Structures are given as structure tokens and as C-alpha cells.
Amino acid sequence: MKRLRILVLMHEDLVPPEPLTGQDVSGAEWKTEYDVVSTLRKLGHAVTPLGVKSDLGVLRAAIEDGKPHIAFNLLEEFDGVAVYDQNVVSYLELLHVPYTGCNPRGLMLARDKVLAKKLFSFHRIPFPDFMVVPQGRTVKRPKWLPFPLIVKSVTEEASLGISQASIVQDEDKLKERVAFIHASVGTGALIEQYIEGRELYVGVLGNGHVHVLPVWELLMDQLPEAARRIATERV
Image: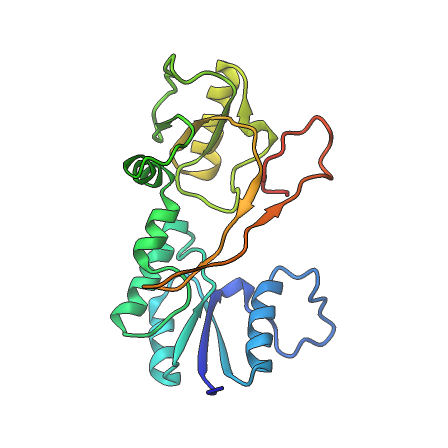
């Protein structure tokens, strides 16, 4: 196997310390970053971890100095804004640096739940009825959208802003939850028909010819009996 120069991009607060003397890796916030870096090194590659927050100059300098064969992208935001992660990938494309993960178009579609639903509609893929309440607007629920409903951020991922309280049964709770998303998450609110179901994940690899990985399920058997089976921030 060819030995590669790999630049691993991560949030600057999640760069694993070197050396690890006295550090508890199992409970560290940077465990994922450490696992990626250490595994790539065990495979014989020359790995450079790079913390990125709000300065693309740091990224350009690392690319010019290290001339990586590929960037392993673990960034989920830039300058504290989740939807800016697609712009970092666009920057890598402008610099002609190969990278792992989705391209900018894929990241944009994955972030925008409303746009994704419109694509589903075009391809006749069923999805729950929904409406959007932009920031600064009040809720006016249409009659065709009955309770129970679930309230989410339009653009955030990883269940940010989702809790058991996200599922609402009346107008007062609906208004309260929309206000929470607007104020605490800082995005528009997506209101969907709530449908009981399972939490399934499917990974896809490749560009022209894609390879679909096996489906895996998030089991929530340890939740209290009365709790809804949804993936919250705490699950």
C-alpha cells in the first residue's frame, strides 16, 4: 500500500494532545479525531492533524507546506456555523486537493432538510407532511397538519435541538418549541407530522459507481418506557 501524506481537518478544540501522557482517551471529546489519526498512522501513513476554526489561511499554509495527497475531512462547521462546512470543501476543490466525504453539493443537500424533501417529492419518495417557520415568524399551523408534530432545526444535524419535548401535542407546546429552535439553535424551525418508526443509518461510498454499506439501527431499548423512540441530543 502506498504511503500517503494525509492532512486530517478537525475543529481546533478537538485536536488530540501529543503526547497522550495521562490522558483518558475513552472519555475525551476528541476521541473520534484521535481514533482517525492513530489508525491512519498504524496503517503507515504520514498524518498531520490540523485544527481549523475561522481562518482558511491556516488550511492553505498547511497544504502549501505539507503538500498532502489527500485531506481527511472531520470538520462539521466553520467559524461556528454548521452550514459553512460545505465552503471549506469548496476551498479544497479550488486548491485541487482530494478529500474524503461529501462534495459541497452533497453537504448542502444534506444540511437543508426542506430542499431534501422537495427532491424526494420530485422522485415520488414519500415523506411526512411538513411546514417551515422562518426566524422572526410566528406559527400558523394549517388544518392539514394534525398533531402530534415534531419540531426540528431546518439545517442542523446530529439531533441538535431535539429532545423529548420536540414532539408536541397542542398549539401552546408547538409555539413554545418553535421559539426554542429560533432562540437556542438560531435557525428556522421545521414542523413535521410525527410518525413512529425506527432509527436506521445507511452509508454510501463512491462517486460514479456507489457502494451501499449495510444498514445499521440505533436501538433505544434503554429509554424509559414512556419516552418516544427518537434520537435526541442525549441518545
